[in-house]
Length: 125
Length: 129
Image (tube, rainbow over all chains, first blue to last red; front, side, top):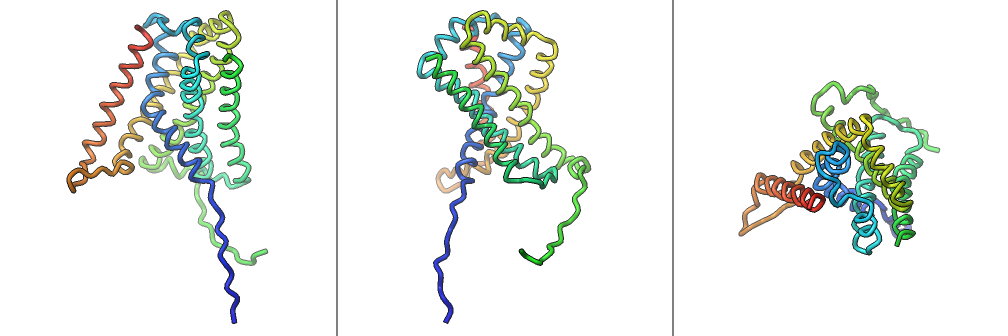
């Protein structure tokens, strides 16, 4: 008689990262181009006046709870998208060594920058 | 320790440069690198913002550097490429049915572009007004 053992399922953590990847991708698709255009090109080149992108306005915004939340999302969420892609691109490039560590480093990086951003916002609050 | 030796096919390092389809795929994935840089620049800007007006203005000043402008220009091109590829995949994710008929792919894609334009204009207005 064969012993019937209950199969043990190991929960994958992929759905969490996949969700963050999707949300980050959406945000990046809609907002990153205009953000780069504003902060990286229009303001430095002086095409548009600094307008609301001055110290006082931004400081007030960053120290309000909704502003802090928006800044955290705008800065950190794209990273959960990009680092997920970089992690999988490493596989595509045939880098086989230490996949576990690659994963830890990639998501760890996104996590670290998220914590960095969160801490600064908290400190400013 | 398993004794089996599975056959793994050799994959040349430049596999993605030999066919335009794969090259475009890798360029899309590569957009991630520049967008990561951009996020780091913003995170740095936030740090400078928290350090006071002088520090923040120094950060703004640093963005005037021709190298910074060039980096942002390239990042913008890649970010737009990400947007285009993301929107073209949207019909696969958004499976909308209206009155028993599947919504046409074109409607979903152009809906995304319309929303993109609205969001972009809105952001430009918020920052300038």
